[in-house]
Image (cartoon, rainbow, N blue to C red; front, side, top):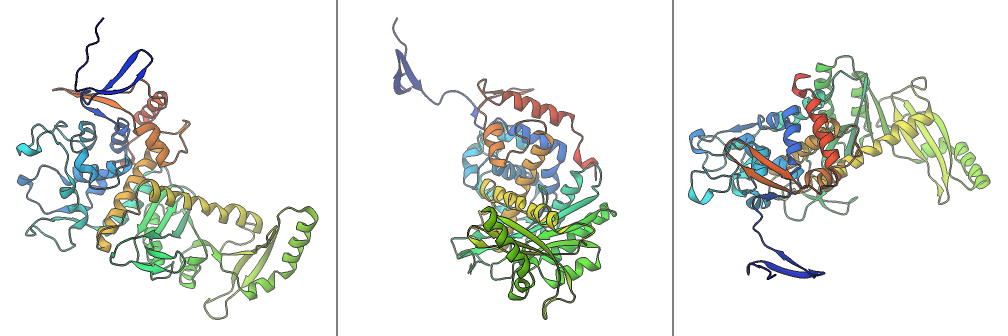
Length: 474
């Protein structure tokens, strides 16, 4: 039998007696079929809807084809799906599934007003960048950039989304604070050389409560790590207590946040703290006996040895009062490794050993959340010229993280991916090949029959279908 072959097909090495041919004639096929789960998560949480409400649109509604909510949704979903640059959206404009997830009434784009835009349902990079680059004073008389972001409203929204995520108020919450480096490679405003990180960078402040992101504040790097932290704490604690007046709050951070104004404010407002304390000669002298005990135990067993000590300590001039300090006198194969923490918790509240090993060391999980956002959701893509534009980019990354965390919390519970990181969720549940067919009444999405996580996908869909809308909780 003669083999029929279109000359346009691309020829690849034979598979036994079979020819392997390929061409781009499969129809509307997307690589992001799992994005439907993000749309279902948005229907439950209203995360993007609430985020879009933080923007003011001064455009003439009779002259636009993309609403602010559609633009915001396109940008957030793009980050969640792994598209880090605005340039990527010039290629994504033709994807009917992304247009469906964004909420476009015509996902094919065939009804666009201008002929050159037909077949491209979504916005391109030139339209999307107005969300970031519009100056704060823009208005209806501005020429091009007329969509302004109200930064204070976005900051409040992150806390609101945290509150909405809880069916009932918890008895106690722990707020983790940390600063990290955000390397920059241009001449952006606010970038300075940082001696500790040894590069030019920003120094953003993050505040998490477990997996929940409450604050992502971009800062220049020529400051103390704790700069502005007290202001953010005051704002967040006030908003949390407005909704949950009886909740007990503890803040936790490394020694970069061990500052008297923060501790004094906590003591005056019934907020507990557990903070790393940088070692000095006075502190080391106070645990000489415990450090020697740890050394002798190490020499006897040849295994790491720890001895904990309770101290009352006050600095010579920077602290307003003496405070409880827990010391860890540790000896390792490489030598002595003493560590100190200062806390408002009493010995009756928490003994020294679990206070350090369980409570303080538990803050390391926050570092994983920061890495998750920076590495997987592109929080470090701060290449715009101004601090304001880069702050808005950080907000988009933050909302993408909140969206994927909501999917993880609501949809992945009880599955093998219940504790998966954002990148794993993306690769296994969102990056699914699918054939898309748009008819008058339906959008058919035919997901890959060979998807290895089809059953997990079905379970996630079932979990989301059973969940109660989050906006009704707060």
